Image (cartoon, rainbow, N blue to C red; front, side, top):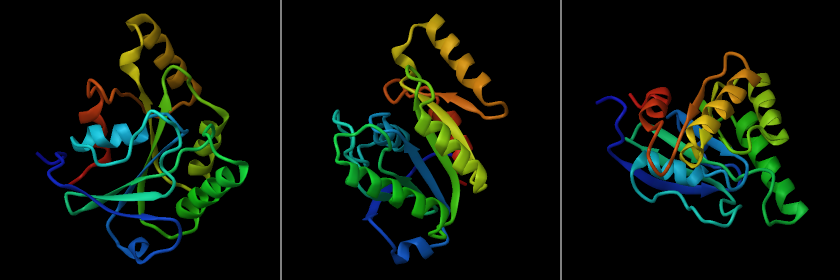
Length: 191
């Protein structure tokens, strides 16, 4: 099965430049606001607790690299927006993310922008989409925590999200039920 994760290992955490960024293996970036469930989503994709997850937002402070199937890196970025951090720390995270995405030269294949389906798009999400588009980084939207909505509300929220940005794929996802896992793995294409 081409899109199955067989091996997933933590490689290292970066807070700036590193030789790992010169590795030619493609990088799949997982990004979103704090407390959106980035680390839990990565753990559900790989099938084990690999990325640090917590009920407290803002646990990821670095660029965390995981080698998947010895072929591609998953990169867990610090969350943006709300977090129990000082303005200086939040500005550091913002600069670190912008540097990595737009000027580090890392071979980014795809950004997985994770949003909370309950909340919808925040201003930070909209800004991220504009920047990814402007820098020609392909991205997909993942509407996380889809299992927490009743069917009627879920259909309405997903329709609103899809209507907001034409031609952008929105994948409903649940780290708990694994809904959307196969679809997302097919898109990140681990071949």
